[in-house]
Length: 269
Figure 1 (spheres, one colour):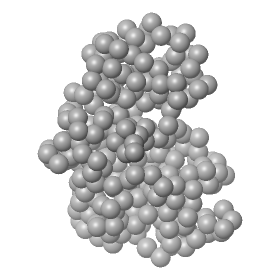
Figure 2 (figure 1 turned 60 degrees about the horizontal axis):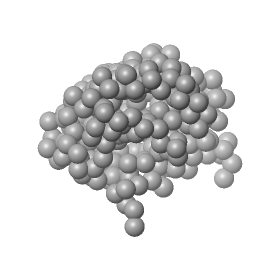
Figure 3 (figure 1 turned 135 degrees about the vertical axis):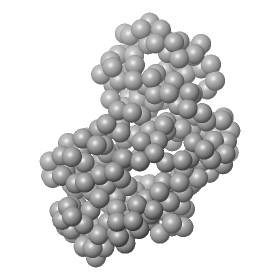
Figure 4 (figure 1 turned 90 degrees about the vertical axis):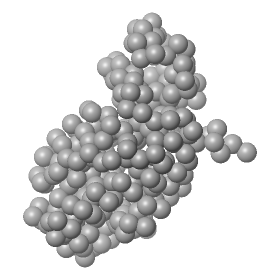
């Protein structure tokens, strides 16, 4: 199916919803979804909700509010309660499922209060190929995924976003900070902040796509291959910053950045 046809299908799906509450992270997917909702339905029929939970980097939340403003839509900033949920904090393979339950319950509470009949989120077609327990929460809570329904891939989402002059079209993919922590390791706010500060230190060097994966006293840095030399040229400064966060050993993963690398050990064999 051609990309233009898929985009038309996306707009038709959104048009049928009349009024929508959008789960908005400020990433490339949710930005295209929010922009299309506003274009099709009008800003009075769209409201964005930004989650300011500790599992999200503070700079990402700031960017999300800025992007929502540029798109020209009303937004609400909330803080969900997954950090009070033992099922989430124990960090099993179903972590994302429990997290999304809290988010979607909060979204529905808002939707009901303002009289909006639908809640939408920005998963794309490629997301169906990865291990994503949160998709089960989408189904259980009747959350609509219009990009997925239109069969839009990440590459196509970026292409359409560029045509629409969305600044997010080349924004690196992001995920919650809990995704840096191995399954079975307890999640707590202090650990999340340590990881966030470690990644901020790398981004301050001009590295856009990075992950600091937590392995106890060891930090495993993932960046694109094009940034390997930058890491090595600044290795002493990086080591100093990450040691401030309690890491004793700092390593560079020679396989580079890749989505879902924390799943590799869990599902090997």
